[in-house]
Image (cartoon, rainbow, N blue to C red; front, side, top):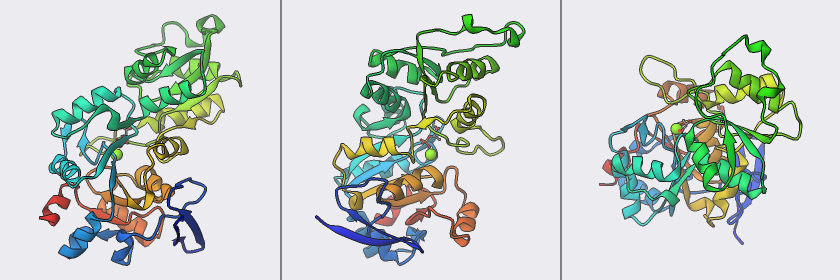
Length: 336
Ligand SMILES: C[C@H](OP(=O)(O)O)C(=O)O
Ligand SMILES: [Mg+2]
């Protein structure tokens, strides 16, 4: 069994065995990205040989979606070419997204329409993870869902009933809500992205969670969606933290950078040292890659701006990516 030693933080040295990328051992391994002798290495400064060696240093590509491949429904220029280029090189491809608004097959259709080669089985979305988790623990009750049909349909696909999708506006004096408004069969509250979020939904979620036996599961805690130029788009983390506050409970979060998605990926027998995690957000994508011992590539087309990265780098604020690129498509130009 191979064992690798790598300084992860100045006062933090730990080991990783090649096959185990448990978050208990947080040691990314020495790898080609390390050959650049510093983290946050801009691949645009690499020599042609270094780019070649980097491309030969991984067999599997896990790519985040929002902010790396597309923003909303517009592909980021060059990203489809890059992902299809990796596939042509024989790399295994997974799309690992904290987005919970679609079932896997709909994500695959969206990706194909934007020029990406993608199969449903290659999509790892948090809606699918929620259904996979509840089915895995033998959950038989009903879910009160703050979220979209993406989660609802994945739950239905594994035979789990749910209520709550869609608008739920304040009808009367909201303080007059009483237990007759609650469904006694509910045994879990799930929180994902919900454009119809409302005060009654917070009241219902908190009331169900007043029962300690009621499970509390969340898809992700991204603070914001990738920035548009002028407005801030609150992410799912906004909703999850609100329900945590009013319920005085902590959610089990299934998406990046947390344990459940890591454990799910372990079932594919990936070799951490030869896996590349590509992301636009350091506290989810890069953190996830570092926890798993993957190589990490940060692109500047989503949440993290060059200025923010510079600040993180000067503050030595982990997790820092191994390598960076302005946009994913640049890798094809560098390799040609
Ligand atoms: C931002 C996140 O998507 P991801 O960047 O993980 O694809 C989400 O849609 O909540
Ligand atoms: Mg993203």
